[in-house]
Image 1 (tube, rainbow, N blue to C red):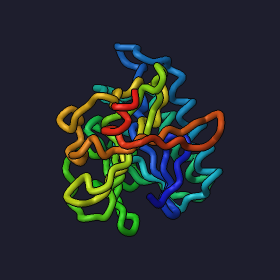
Image 2 (cartoon, rainbow, N blue to C red):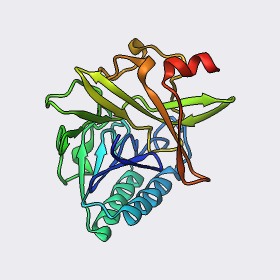
Image 3 (cartoon, rainbow, N blue to C red):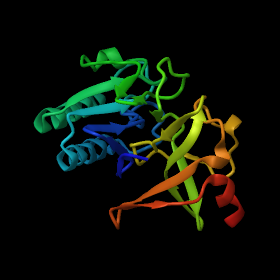
Length: 226
């Protein structure tokens, strides 16, 4: 698959794609995660922009977490993402996800249901796409995989997954998100309608310490190896 993997993101041509930032999770009544997660998201996002110098950065849905009112920390984090793109000369685009119910309150930039990069279309993935494409890049399910007892966020790459087109599912960019273990899941267990043949999905894990990806066999074969 054409594209570069880096810290839960994907770079396609001159476009940086991240998914499921869930900015604001942990700041509401149910403190599942530490409040400092926003700073981590901004710092890592800025590093990606500096490393890859994209023309455009796309959030593939769920920029925000669901809440009734927007905490000030959410506004600060979104401002930090904007600043990272502004300083790097990149345009920031959001493709809304199912959690982005309050997006208008903090985001006044470009919003597109689906964002096209040549033959690739980026969208959140909670609904079927409207556009035809050779490849879809999505988020939504927050995939992780357990290898030798250790849980790791992973990309899932599948050929011919949706009406003959390839699909790449990104892990949640918020690394405090526990994610969903995909080892034993069936297609019916995924929330995204774009994943239809789980046995053919190939997990790819970003090894932060080595700064490289580690590829594994398709899940159908991988399960037999465990």
